Image (cartoon, rainbow, N blue to C red; front, side, top):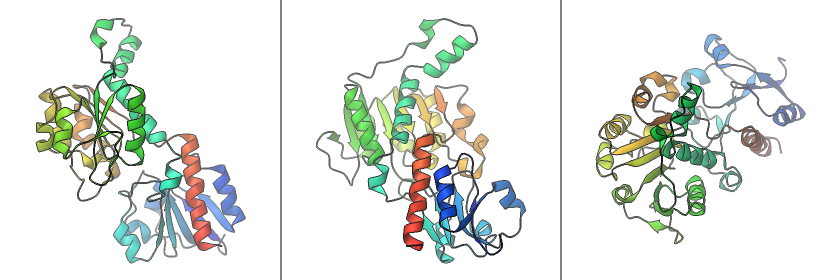
Length: 315
């Protein structure tokens, strides 16, 4: 293996078989590795390409273990699991799905999961199912609401937010949105985040995490939320001020919260999340960042970023 170029996959579970075959055809030796091995081993001398998903943070310390690394590949749109500055300073190529809009329009997994969370939350499906599993059969404790004529407020009308808007119209909902960068006359555009949350029965978040969106859903914003609203976040955990969200649940300004992401997940420290701690006492649904984790979508994404690498480096 010493004379070959090595692709080291840090998170290889159920990685695309087609992608593995294509790495071999392109002259690489594919290695199914593990984060545990990376953390223990001092150097990986012959690795030129490292593939990651979302389990760990790729920082300078990790990069230094791969002295001959040329490229980091992550089949994700978000990049908060990557130390972009260190990757750039080391002149390492970074390939992700960020900006690959035409391809991403063919991947509805995150939007579909958002809608599943929405329905589960507003119809009390998780608690009702747990009640039946425990031997109960009391429908009066698990009444919910129908979606027809409810107002959904979408924060960020990009790819995912746009899909959610279309789903909402099929369910006869009124669609409001706040997005300074989008003008869409099919839906009601709100001039501020405050005006959106004041009117919305359901709030769904679809923005990228950056310095302007960190804790975008703050104590001040939640002070203005329509009483009894439901909040859904499948973007990134740090977009919520989790302490403020829990306070809004305790004050019953929010009737429920469903998230696929937590503020502490990148540090593998979810038990320190304020939302995680409160889930037994409030109407809270948390899934472990699975919105994009469908077999078909993940394989398509893995093959797509691999093709980007081959196109940019081997053609």
